Image (cartoon, rainbow, N blue to C red; front, side, top):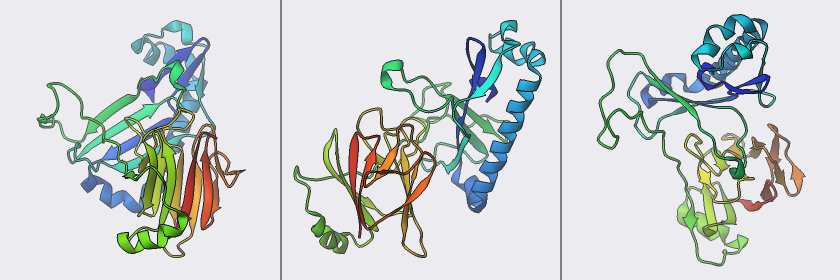
Length: 280
């Protein structure tokens, strides 16, 4: 957070979004308590923000001078964009992080439209051992660890989408899909098989881990919504984590809110792309 400060006139913006990656061996012991750890991080961020706003002049002579803001920011307010912190913790499934390393991405807030520029992310890697990690053959000398690549499970189809009634035949062929999403993006008609209990949907990006990556307008957030399946009941819910909204059958889900998904539905993302949802 300290390294990602950004000053605009009499306000200093602090990063509101944090994505943390661990080596899978380090992540596994924390898998069941990740929500608790994320909550503790949010509490610590709240405390630091309150501390900064309570002691601005002291900070101006230390931290702000280091980042080149200077004494003029002594009376500035520290502001977080949005109503809440976003803290997410993931295993590094690409195998780029060594045991003991932690990779942290931070960003000021919701993605800007492309005409205003994509901006840059603050990225830090911490290790609990003093020696430097081995250089990797696919990285230039002195470069930092590359972020995990985005994954997409797009399944290319012919130009015409199969009718929804054909889903039963598809299920018999695949044998493991819980549901299907049919849509058309800049790559044409697509079918996405939902095979996990959580699917993250959006445009993706350098530090945005998405399962279904959409090639569409920037109104769709890099991480736009999440579909979750209750393993015990088989029921599905959708959570809107976007800037410009998610709707199910025309009814808005609500920012940072969840709604139940029926067996069939039209999921609209920011009003620019529709996903046809159907359970298997």
